[in-house]
Image (cartoon, rainbow, N blue to C red; front, top):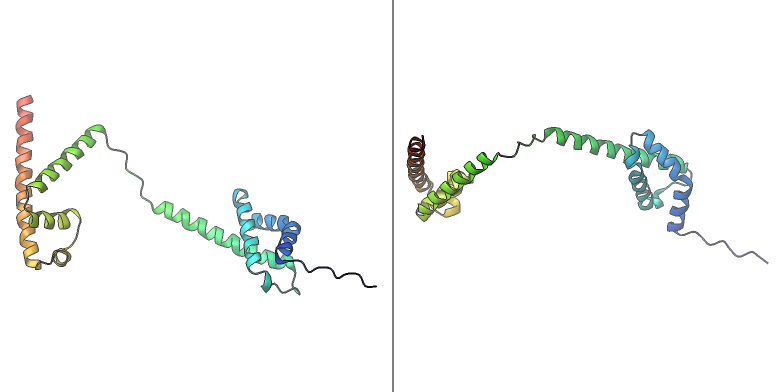
Length: 184
C-alpha cells in the first residue's frame, strides 16, 4: 500500500515558510544596505510583499537567499533615494517667517479693511478687473477672455481703477498724518 501523497503547499503557506526561515537574513541585509533600524521592519515587509507578487517568477534553480537579497537591495535603494529626495525637498523649503506681532496683525487687518471698502465703492466692471489683475495676478488678455471684453477695455478699466485706488490711498495717508499731528 502506498502512503498518501503529501499535499502541495499553497502560495500563502510557501510565503509563510519563506518568511519564517529567511526574515532574519533579510532584516540584517536591509541594515547592511543602509536602512535605519527604525524603518527596517517596514522595509522587511515590503520585501515580502514583492516576494508574494513575484512568487511565481522565482527560478527554483537559483538560491532563494540570493533572490531575497536582490529584492532587499532594490527596496533599500528605493528607500535611500526617497530619503534623499525628501531631504532635498526640506532643504528647498523656505524658512517660515515669524508670526506677525500684534501691531503687524492690526496693520494687516486695517489694510484688508481699506481694500475691501475701496472695492465695495467701485462699479462692477472696474472692481472685477482690479481684483483679477492686481489681486489675483491674471494678465490683461486672460481677464479679457474671462470677462468676454476686449483687452483694450480691460486696460482702460484697470488704469481707471488704479487711479481711484491711488487717490483713496493718498486720502487715507493724509488722514493718518493729520490724526498723528492731533494726538502729538
